[in-house]
Amino acid sequence: MRILIHKWLTGDLGTAGNYQYQAIHLWSLAVIIAALAVLLVLSFRLRKEPKKLRTLLVGVAWFQLVFEAAWRLIYLLLKNSTLASLWPMYPCNLGGILLPLFVLFDCRRGKQMFYLFGFIGGCLTFALPQGIFSSDVLVFPILKSLLQHTGLLFIPLIELVGGSYRPSLKDLGWTILGALIHVANCEGINRLLGLTGDYMFFRGDLPFVIPGVPQFITMSVFGLIVLSLLSFLCNVRASVQWIRGNIHK
Image (tube, rainbow, N blue to C red; front, side, top):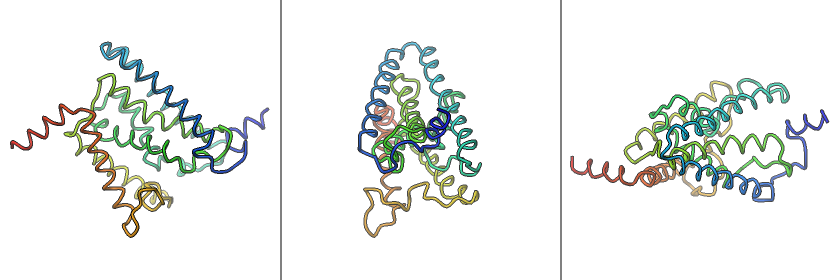
């Protein structure tokens, strides 16, 4: 039993391979969507009870932070990971730590900078889960990735539906600054730690690559368009007012 648990924690159970868009991926998506639907209904019902909504949000935030600490400890003890390799290198790794902290400290500026980018990262990860579903069994490394990324969806959506925070187009400058911080982390700090992976996906083979165009340009333009569109849609009234105010200046 002890050996079985160890193998589950280290991801050595089942048959190794690429199982994205197969049963384990699709069932995971179904469970996440169902959990998200329950949370959104609950958030909508609590929109006029801010204290209860805050309790729900803080509960999700604490779970995320405790889990972030727990899986790192497990990897240090069982997978001989180095401290450098446990740095939040990917945007979603960093978002998984920052978003709960912004909830606990009710940091509006942090939400303006990182909520939308984190939400988009969570969506893209579940749509294009490269390297996550590496076994046909729900081993801990797969579960870790699923829980990390669900937090990036749950936290912003709970606030959006509950009405406690709604991004708008006027926040776009701060959101872009947050994206640039991610770039500095993925392409700068990781080098200082001696890590050389493509953590910002600037050199990969994502579906929207344009032949002959450097991928960092493609991703930057695509990201700016998506961030702008989501910023507008999350709070149409405030965004329109902001646009009109700038036109009339």
